[in-house]
Length: 139
Image (cartoon, rainbow, N blue to C red):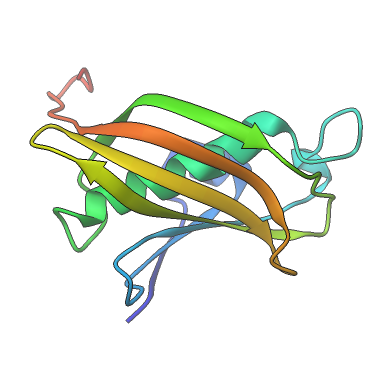
């Protein structure tokens, strides 16, 4: 059963993206309907927001490896992003991720950002580590 996570963080509320969990393949999806608030001065999706969607898909997918609710925190250790095509306001984007490897303390992931026509907008690879946060939010 697919569950949608909305408005869970300040970043999510500000940007307006959704996270879906519960897909049969065990991965998360990060979805954004691009609006004028998301574009840069060239009227295309800001690259930092594309990276944010890819990062969230990989982080949530990492969490799903240990927690079916998708809420166990994982930290991004490193991330490399490739921008392949522009996305305009009015476009729905979906970032998907998959675990490609890892060991006891780190997970390796790959992610793709596609529009509703399945056109590849950006890709990323990342290294993620399970976070042990104290009450102050420090890792």
